[in-house]
Length: 142
Image (tube, rainbow, N blue to C red; front, top):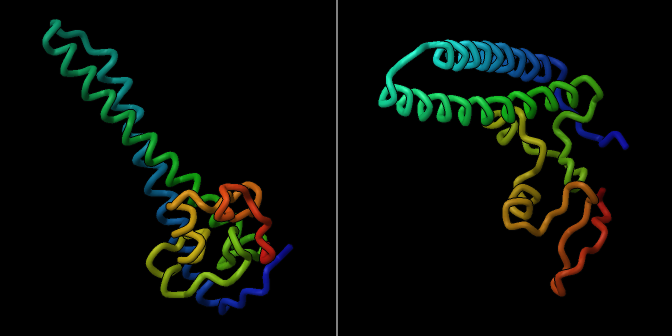
């Protein structure tokens, strides 16, 4: 289902350009950190330096994992632009407000669904909202 979300073509191009720039910057950061991790692993050091080096590599790897997640979210937003669903909430199918997209161009949920997701009451995989009794009810908007 392609939602009926109307975003001006020029504004959509601006989002696409911004997301591509973020994608490029993140990929460069990921590549640079991976090189730094490899270089740190190749260097020989005494046991004290080795311990410090391991901690630094673990920290860099954790940051890189976060960068990869953000890169994936940006790539998904670019796919939504491509397939015409950018600006539609993947939780309820409604429009994501332009101000939210301007602040977070890779947002995939409207504010209401994002809050439900963070509270653990929205199941994005099934399009269901948690019912008061702990079960799930189908989200009629999806």
